[in-house]
Structures are given as structure tokens and as C-alpha cells.
Length: 83
Image 1 (cartoon, helix red, strand yellow):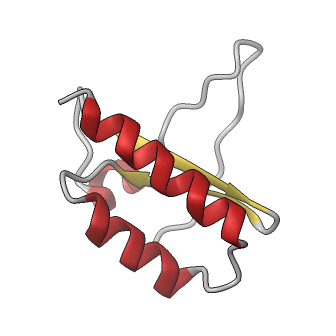
Image 2 (image 1 turned 90 degrees about the horizontal axis):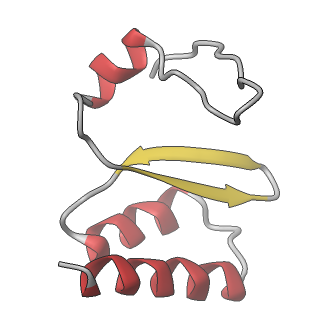
């Protein structure tokens, strides 16, 4: 696990620090997902397996509300429909 600070620009952009990119194996063109909850925001690499992502997310964030889970599932469905 890597903890690194970053700054949001006036355009709402953040550069993912190199140690985080390396830890998550992100490279130019990699897709990432942002998940917002009352505890904060989680950024994770976009996966080709949304079911596995939801299982992992539920294991790590057991206090998600039913509406948050439904929203995540709808977003994954939208992403898969674009393929």
C-alpha cells in the first residue's frame, strides 16, 4: 500500500504520483474508476471483469448502502455495454 499526496488543479485534474502508478501497474492509456462513499474516494484500475471488481469492492467496503451498490452495478453495466 502506498500513501502519497497530490494536488487538485484549478481544472479538477490530479497527477497520479509515480509510486502509485507503479504499485497499480498503470501506464499511459490505462483506465481508472473512482468510487465515492461517505468515507472518501477510492481510485482503482478499471478491470475487464466487473463482477470480480464488485466482489472485491464489497469485501473492502462492507458498509456501502444498497443504493450505492446499485449505482456501481449500473455504472459497470454502462461500461460493459460500450464494448
